Length: 247
Ligand SMILES: Cc1cc2nc3c(=O)[nH]c(=O)nc-3n(C[C@H](O)[C@H](O)[C@H](O)COP(=O)(O)OP(=O)(O)OC[C@H]3O[C@@H](n4cnc5c(N)ncnc54)[C@H](O)[C@@H]3O)c2cc1C
Image (cartoon, rainbow, N blue to C red; front, side):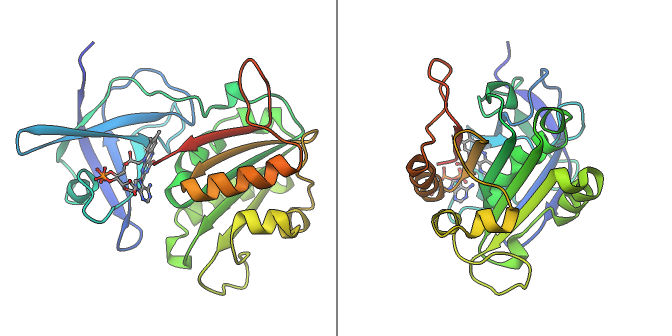
């Protein structure tokens, strides 16, 4: 199998000075919602490749990634320059285990993301599986400022489609918004604000939690969940917490 397929940029959408979505036309093998694909660019004769979660549901095209321009970042400093019609490299196959097939049954599914970590959850939420398998689906999406709360229209469409089965909890840590929770997710689990906002208990018996994004958020949130008797899910040792680290 070739290491790369050719991709063509359909659109580059800029949400904030550093947040972007890239829409890409490229062949890809069938994949599962929540998986990531390697994206590459040839820079000065060398190919730089990095993994990115796919935000589009598996049957939807074009491919979509949501990324942040990392200061001095080798690849992202080049990705931001791409425009419609430009070419890039896309791995032929997506990978990753942060998929619903790996998540055991429970009444409630909690998807907790910081920043760009919302990407794989957008893909999952646009499939039928979470709505068929879980009584309630909670999306916790934490950012620093309101301008960083991308994809609000897509989330509003989910709210309109799924009604009370879908619970959306935005967190904005550095601004008062009137609708989002303030502070950080682990702290809101510790002090009970997240449960009182959703009306749902976070417990080993009732919850499956998927975490994606900032490593500190993942670490601190896992600590809080483990204090409630939850543990990391492994195939051989089922638990309640499924994690994807971006760095
Ligand atoms: C499985 C997986 C999926 C990923 N999916 C995404 C995705 O959907 N969107 C995305 O933006 N990134 C994602 N990443 C991170 C991505 O692969 C790159 O590391 C990132 O884009 C930086 O690449 P770079 O070459 O510009 O920076 P580099 O020069 O490689 O610098 C890497 C540094 O950038 C910082 N960094 C990396 N990713 C982020 C991030 N998302 N937010 C803030 N700081 C970051 C960290 O400090 C890291 O040490 C994913 C990583 C993994 C392992």
